[in-house]
Image (cartoon, rainbow, N blue to C red; front, side):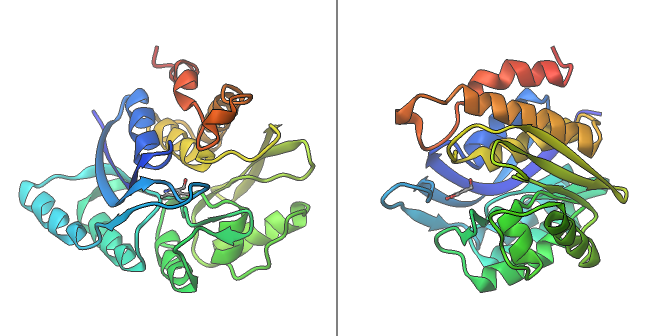
Length: 277
Ligand code: PXL
């Protein structure tokens, strides 16, 4: 079956995040990709001095109604950065109405990193995001988001007992499959912790110095692309990790490219890893 998936996140016109990352990666994964933009920004909010923000919340129910009339459905729905807490109810309506039976609902709770919420988000948004995350089939929080979603203290350095606490609390609250990102037990490694069918598995890989913007979106998109090519969550998490590391490596040393990663350069690797070439 030719899969059509829907991704709901913002258009940051410049900055290599959200839809400008998700669309090319999901296309490379051989998936027809429909979009629902949550907002349009001139550029992302992570490091530029300002940005425009056009909220598209009220377009969402109108678009859903049109899709209902056209009988358009999706074999997966993948959400990222959302523009307002109100959108979360609209997204839930879309999933309920347009996701095919057995289709996966994947949520990247893109709202925070490095212990801080992104500009424009507050506690009310976190509470709303909990509703979305705990209704999803698969979630991809980073450590900061997992701490916020479980009302747990954020820690910069930690061991396995902390990441087990986070994933246990996520499961207790209703999470099903968890891909916890940015799990770094030592200064020079990082990785992901996957909880799938009650089994916890960690995939650690080399860490590249410095923080990179947009890697969460590259990672989540590559993960969804692999998952929808029938890889398990663990295999998809590994492929996405290697693709993201290569993208970061290919960006290192170019100071003018501080705002995102050159994931385009690693797309041939990704297609090969998915065995599509
Ligand atoms: O990469 C996450 C993201 C998505 N969209 C916008 C952002 C960010 C992170 O800062 O600002 C607009």
